[in-house]
Image (cartoon, rainbow, N blue to C red; front, top):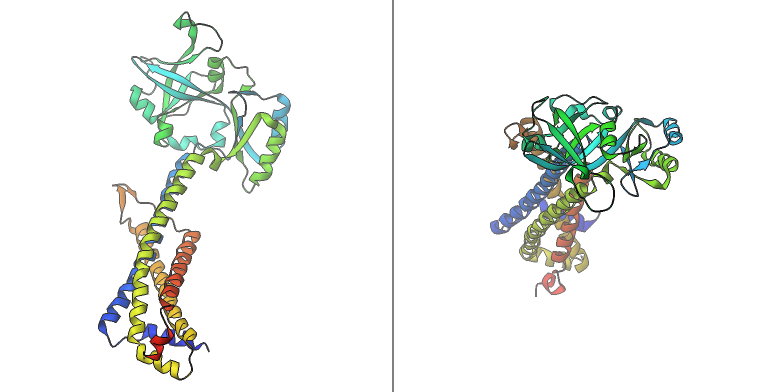
Length: 401
């Protein structure tokens, strides 16, 4: 049996004759427990916020999207359509036309993104689930569905034929503009629905039928801006991506959902990293208590250490006693902290203890990688703190000089 580990366990369980040392030890363990619990709760909170934020963007984001690599549009040939239809791993795909336009109603206007979609769009994304008021648009019509922010800013109603909504886009060409009438293509539309996803999309997107968008932009029937794909359950994204790329060639670049929201993912990941580093710094400060506790224990056990030395225990083994004691204190404290944090998270999920709004509880998500990250962080910091403290053991200390 490892003598150093055995004695370390005894020291960890036993009380010192000095109440001040017992108090310092309790503070050190409680600090580790609270540090581990706080770190995991915060990481779970950020994981919950990340999932909560991304669930809205995923409603209107496809599994894969093919975007043009040059200019604003590309030609999708009948041959390419036939080849795409043969791909078994694709459940549905929708042809898209996107362009920045000006939407105007009476004396109000806004710069928005017009997204022309075909009939398959509702099969690619669950757009119906985010319609806040009204209905989804019909194809081959002048109907539009606008974001909640646009509707509010322009005071748009639903099916209000007395209040015309105009969409303008500059005509392509070169040379000097001599007349504003000749400078823009325009179309009169009617709002039939309002969607609510998130602030960015609510304030910037307007949906219309693809033929309306193509006519407004003077596009050919087979000229589009992008193709959005919904994959079948269990399909290998990498393989399907390569097959689509082989069909469409270099004129498009394919992006998955994460790449379509790369700025959002980077922001969330950066915030998560920043919070982890801040709370790790708090843990480092807490582990100074562990170092202090071990050093005080060494001084308190000075006579016992002298006895161990005299019966043949080496200085190296005595150092290992306090190294194991500090490491055990850290690991046990971290384990208890994780249990405490899991209980708190369970209570939040069950009873909604913390609310963002009166109807929205703060989202929390338990992720195994966060459990592992916290436990490894606590263990590594505990080992380092124990090593720093244990090297204070010297030959002169154990000899009693």
